[in-house]
Amino acid sequence: MQNYNLKSKIQIQIKRAQILDLIRDFFKKRGFLEVQTPILIKNVDTAPYIEPFKVQFSDDKNKHYQGYLITSPEYSLKKLLAQGFGNIFEITKAFRQKEALGGLHNPEFTILEWYRTQANYRQVMKDTEELVCYLVKKLYHHLYLFYQGKKIDVSLPWPRISVKQAFKKYAQINLDKTKNLNYFKTIIKQKGYRIDPTSGGVNWNDLFYLIFLNEIEPQLPKDRAIILYDYPLPQAALAKKKK
Image 1 (cartoon, rainbow, N blue to C red):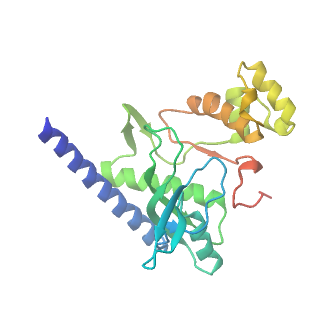
Image 2: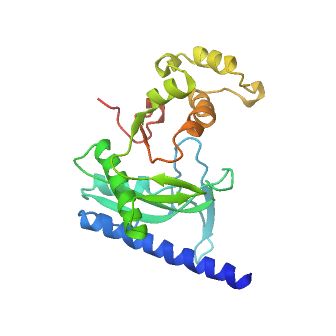
Image 3: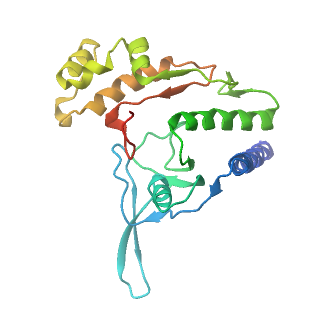
């Protein structure tokens, strides 16, 4: 059993190394520059629902400092864009706490981010599906993969559905009307959800994710890669409003 576990761990590390090499190959062939930005930073990420790790450290004179481990490289990469860098990408470690541990979350994880200049988010959608297809094709020589016992088709083009369409289709909610918070709360209560009165003020994002995680995400296709786009304006951190 120990030999089997060791062999499995070795295979995972080999596959991981192949994937990282292929990601770099994909972006470099398209003219992207790979960059490295700090993992330990002075100022915290202000995105809601993301909890960073505080880090205390000292210098040789025993002067104390406080910093944070990055929750993503986004801030640093956008500083490079503002300084005039062109298309860039980074593969790095990131850290987040106070998230449910399991198959979807880990306090330490590897993250890929890339940025295009002179392009919009639809081009980034295209990058995403082409990257996944490139990886799957190179690794398995076909355009499907198996994940948690399910066969997933990643062939192009991927279907797309807006968040507004998804709420209408899967939860029968018109997101435009939820701009009225009291109306949104009424819909939540009618669906049988309880809002804890002791949890303080409930904001729009709380209600959005209550529906999204319970009614939207579980109904998305399990056998097909899909792009969910046009998230509502309250979630537009470091992004401009769509025209």
